[in-house]
Image (cartoon, rainbow, N blue to C red; front, side):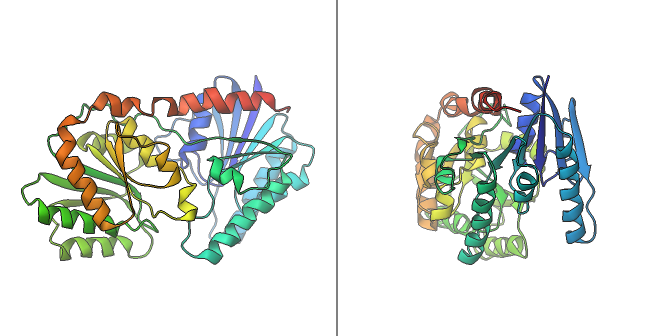
Length: 354
């Protein structure tokens, strides 16, 4: 059996991408996963050798110990290694120039601070120069990297079906899942307020799952109260990914709201996949990547402002009885994690020499 080493500066199971790679490659590969911190509770590690590097009080010491563990496992490793980008990862390839180590880029920076974005993206481009082969989450990300004369591919996002609960669309049960940081989520609350004022008898509720740094959640709750929407908006806090099935089963419209900016345009949104594949009609901002996924069968594209969100809710209210769960679920059927691993990642790995 071929050997595969995955290095990810996150605990096993924390990032869905590399976790799903492990699950769908483990029948063909002897996999070792090196991560920082304990595996996420409830994740499936059967057949995977998970190395969990303990975190320390000192970030500097934690980083040094993690790098040392990566170097230790690479030193005697005979097989193919995948490194999911982290800021110091360039040193791994420079110290082992003859080893086959593949670099994967899951994201470029989406910080609103242009200086921070440029600093982070420059670190990514510098790391890319060290590696022989590179994958990225989208064509847009790949085009921004120095991959000339390198073996490269788009290794996209995917999803598994989170909820199989049958849908009815008589009412509107909105669901947002994700971070609150940098998403301008307050505009969806303002949009809901506009819609509720125009359609006071509409049966609508908005479930918000997630978290933010600082006082983002408090700000959203204060806004909700000031607009007198406490009876329509429920804040659930953070729910582990593996426990999302119940809330997705209760809802029928998914909200994928990110600012339409140059840096978000190239980032495929995980939730668009997850919502549609679980039967939720999708309200999504019209980024370049969302335009590839959202069709009249599964959702509606909008601008990143409150009025556009309100208009989308009016569209849902007017057309909800025409929604077809079968078409919504089938619209992204070729984007399951198993399909992505079987059709894209596995053939690529076979093309690499150990």
